[in-house]
Every structure is written in C-alpha cells, then in structure tokens.
Amino acid sequence: MEAIVTSGLTKRFGDLLAVDGLDLLVSSGGVVGFVGPNGSGKSTTIRMLLGLLSPTSGGGEVLGSSIAHPSRYAHRVGALIESPSFVPSLSARANLLSLAALRGLQVARVDAVVETVGLAGRDRDLVSTYSLGMKQRLAIAAALLPDPELLILDEPTNGLDPAGIVEVRNLLIELGRQGRTLLVSSHLLSEIEAACEQVVIIRFGEMLFSGPLSELKARSSAHIELAPEHEQDTTRLAELLVDRGYAVRRASGDVVVEVAVSVAPELNRIAASGGITLRKLSAHEETLEDTFLQMTGATDGGNALVRSRQRAGRRALFASRKSSTGKGAADA
Image (tube, rainbow, N blue to C red; front, side, top):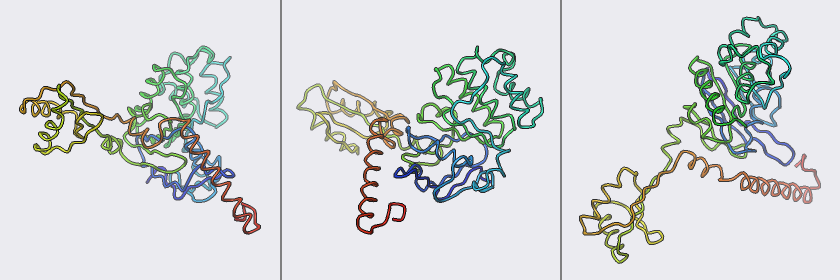
C-alpha cells in the first residue's frame, strides 16, 4: 500500500492557485523529501493531507483512506506543523505526559519517544533550558507519541544552527530505518539531501520532479574550459579536440567541452600532443543544489515576482470574463 496518493489535488485562495493539480505518490517506508521554494504550496498540500484544509478540487488518500475523512487515519499519522507550543516552565517529560493524557496514551509511550529522539537523561530538564535543536527533537517526540505509521514534518530544520540540523537529519534517517514513512518538507534541497532517497519537487503548487534522488543527480551537467597559452592556438586546439570526437563550443575566448570532470587529464594530453601549452584547464560540475535552483528559480524574490505576475494575469482574466459575460469571477 502507498502511504500517500493524490490525484489532481488543487487548492485556490481567491486568485492565488496554491496547489495546481498535484499528483503525488509516496511509497511506504523511508524518508521522502518534499522540496520547493518558499510559497511553493508545500504547507498547503500538507494541511490538505492532514484534513486541516479542504481541496478546491481533486483528492487523495493517506494510508488507504480518503483525505475527505481524516478521522479514519488521524490516529496513524504523526505531524509537526510549524513550531509546536510547549510550556517552558515544565520539563520535557511533563509536557509529553500532558499530551499523552490528552490522547489517552500510556506513560510507556513517553518513555519510548524520549529514548527514540535522544532526550533520555535530559527529559526532566525544563524546556526553557533547551536549545533549538533539542526543542525540535522534543517536537518530533510529541509527533511520535501515537506510534504513527506515517510522520509528516513541515520544515523540521527551519531556524536551526548547523549542529541542530545534523541532529535532526540523523534522527530522520534513524526513523526511516525503523520502517516508518516520513514526508519531510523543506525549501532547501541541501538540508534533506543526506536523509532522503526519494524526492518530490514542486514550484507554485505544480509538480516539477518526483523520483529517486539519484535520478535528479543524473540531470546535473559538467563541462571543462580550456585556453591555450597563445591565443592564436585557440582554433587549432578546438580542431584537435573535434578530431578526437569531442563536441566543443567557444565561450569568451575559451574552448568548452561538455564532458565529465574526470576527462580533464585526457584533454590536457590531447593539447600537448599538438604542441599546445594550456594556460587554463578548468573543470566545472553542477551540484544537486544548482540543478534544484535551475528548476525552481534562483531567489525567493524572483519567484515572488513571477507569482505576483501570475496573480495579476488571473485577476485580469476574471475581470475580462466579468465584463464580457456580466457574471462574477466565481460564476466564470
């Protein structure tokens, strides 16, 4: 059974199309990254999966039950949405005991989750003395209280320092190894890259990629830039490389070859065989983050501008329809 399946899942807020016909498939077991820039619709999607928002159209299933009836699967799902509130003047253990009592859970679950998230020995300390990383682990402990099959975490590393990010990453990996299914959202691919084997990328509520992380990495490109010591040798260098079967292009006076960086020594030998000394041999390889930014947009500001133009276009379309038909936007 798949943990999460959606079909055409859509959510509108007025002229804002927050989630656009999303077809999501999350297999059971392991950690799945749910990634996209700020404002891409991740949190809205998660809220629909948890029954906190109703879709405008489309639907889906969580653990085999329709999202139209979240009460049928709520007890099998743990969630961390934004930053949960704890009583700072109480210990972590006292906070968890209160939550367990509200949900009718046994004290043994508190002992179990404290051990799972690595707070054993610190669970009787006041929450006010906790670091951000420890508070986030406590929040995950609260989500784990019902011993859920599916754990949905919205930006679990947001605001943490590097040490806290590593702590949470390691915890996510361990929870995935235990056989649980984790859907972990983030606006930075690098934050969850080490923890996930599967990734879903959305932008403006639209699916851009869904599949193994290795497949996404395969999309990364590499190239090598070469320049001879004497500029007049540039054309001859390009001809030598073409004769050896390499496709080349010229850019800013350099000869550029679209190959893996490991080919650099071979290109150097080809140049030397033709009596050409190189003054530049520079290998460039895209990172996974580079690929992600190319897909989703380089900056939040740029994405916000595109989103603003989309909304303005929709408002203009609705106004045009109203003018021509005499009906309101909702009727149109």
